[in-house]
Image 1: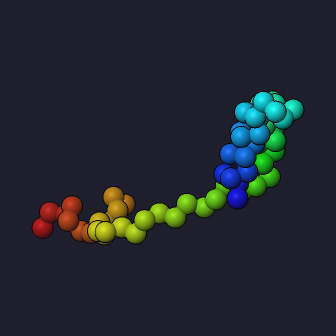
Image 2 (image 1 turned 180 degrees about the vertical axis):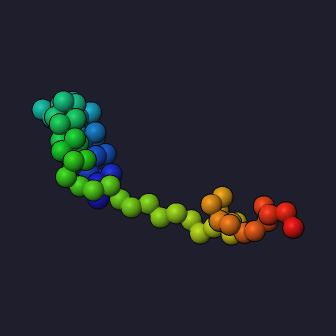
Length: 63
């Protein structure tokens, strides 16, 4: 999981007992972001259906 890996890098960088620096975390997180595609976000289902502004419903014509 991408976000979990990024959090782990931050935890390692903040641990003073390790020789893992914030620079190391930044370099590795940049590589992760470049190689791993971001997760696809699912949009919630719409509760209502409205016509789009480009839809031609015929209401703009005067009869």
